[in-house]
Amino acid sequence: TTSPSANWSYPTSIRFGAGRIKELARAATAAGISRPLFVTDPGLAGLPITAAALDVLKEAGMEAQLFSQVQPNPVSANVAAGVAAYKAGGHDGVIAFGGGSALDAGKCIAFMTGQTRPIWDFEDVGDWWKRADADGIAPIVAVPTTAGTGSEVGRAGVVTNEETHTKKVIFHPLMLPKIVICDPELTVGMPPAITAGTGMDALAHCLEAYCAPSYHPMSEGIAIEGMRLVKEALPRAYKDGSDIEARAHMMSAAAMGATAFQKGLGGIHALSHPVGALYNTHHGLTNAVFMPYVLVHNRSAIEGKMGRLAAFLELPQTGFNGFLAWVMEMRSNLRIPNTIAELGIDGEKADLIAEMAVVDPTAGGNPIELTTQGARAIFDAALTGK
Ligand code: NAD
Image (cartoon, rainbow, N blue to C red):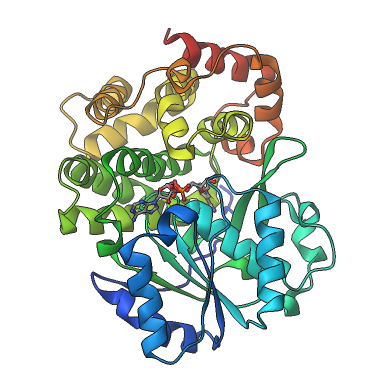
């Protein structure tokens, strides 16, 4: 026998609980921040939860500047504008407040304040992150307001290159937020459709991490408990947004998914990234549509694992088919479309998407090798529903 060898990394300090946004100023101080740039998106900028978070800082005498030029699926121009605002305002750290878009943008802004190379030099490829000037990375406090991406516990930010229409994962270990506040009350006002899409993102992270072939039993343990929480809580949070226990479980599941996916992701993400970059679709929703088609494609390699998972989740039907049936039922209960055609996508760019999918950094985690033909077959199945 041989002893496996792997690198495992665990996230940051998380202050978890309803109402803990009140600790925002203390968390910033603990992270070494006294003049934060508060990064969020335009939709959130107008919501009471944002005003309340800014009030916490004000009451503590902390001068924060609001920066909200972050679009869904952020582009590099958003990061550049944030870096300019950070420097002009003499800030000493970033509070990233929002969904994955605002969190990723905030993390990349904090990272890029200290870099001289262009952002694309830090794509998650090999050890490109070692090119960075690690001294220049500003401290980050992250506050998620959706429960899906888990970006708050991640060391990467997803940024779209607006010139090449590609989604790039920008990575540096120090991009991990120093302190996270997970306050489920912030997610209570999320509309059902965003609750559904982001919640399915958490499921996609746990599922692909669980199925990825690398050696990481700790991640697998986290992933299956994350999926159990999604099973219990997502239908409840969707039906009644004010169910605070369900919101809390979903916030945990999101952080667990992103903790687990250091083990690897797979075909769902490899296809969802190019589709999101080319069509600006919501990431979690796109993952949810692709999920059953990728499961079926990978069936031969994951049959045994799915059996264990279906048993752990106490699903009504056993085995691979039982898990697939549960995914289909969950999708339909959450009113998630069955095909990418219903997201407004046609077959025009099918070949390009298949080519982009196989070079996406997440493709390597797929349980069977993702070939261009395989990616094309998944795309076609997801387009037609067959
Ligand atoms: P999002 O951040 O794009 O937000 C979606 C919408 O929800 C926005 O309009 C926003 O204003 C609104 N919103 C957010 N919180 C709300 C609240 N509490 N109440 C009402 N409205 C609210 O969506 P997301 O799914 O959280 O993030 C998607 C982005 O994250 C994509 O760019 C994706 O590629 C990226 N992502 C990153 C990672 C990572 O590891 N860093 C992982 C997965 C996805």
